[in-house]
Length: 233
Image (tube, rainbow, N blue to C red; front, side):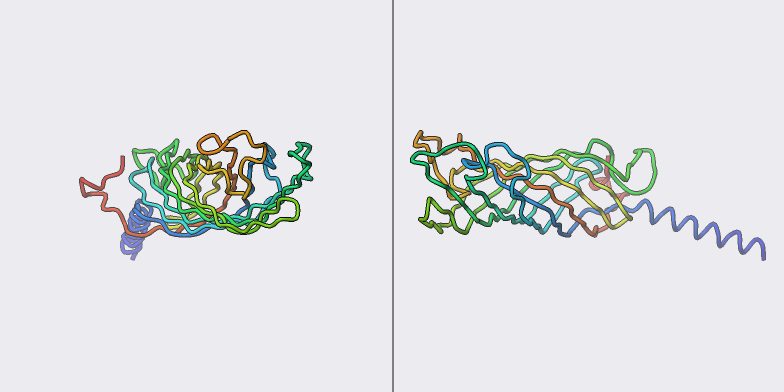
């Protein structure tokens, strides 16, 4: 009887260790957070007039250090020039209430080997990371120049840059906190284009978007660790 219990215990332990060593190629999930805009109205104040932000997220894990995230995100952008000291020509008051939408493609690099379990690769369940990529976004909503309302939709290419931290809560569940600063190539994401009339448009515009997002993802598609072309390193 003791031998049977010992063998059963070894089998359970062995299966548990095997389960812990599983790795997954893909993740899917979503997140919530806050976003705000930098532009002609808000030049540098972080978390100015923060609005609700949300995202849908897909991630492909190339190995323990590198992954590629594809996300579709949205955030509100609000601002009012009366909140700041900078004066506009003619004393014009600018105000905007818009929604920004973006599809982004972002490679991510983790500082440590990220994963569940323990082996010669010294995997860590908690790992900081850097990210940068490309995006395409557009904004909708209202912008007021004095009492004149403009509701045009504006599209722009973008470069999201950021950092974050990943925590593997369980073998198939991950939690991420990501802070992004997105440079947009187009001077009317907030609906305001060159209010000073100095020609600051295109690549040198002042429109940026900041966001902080907490996301949860579910891992699927087990990686074959014995397959040479799928080994993590």
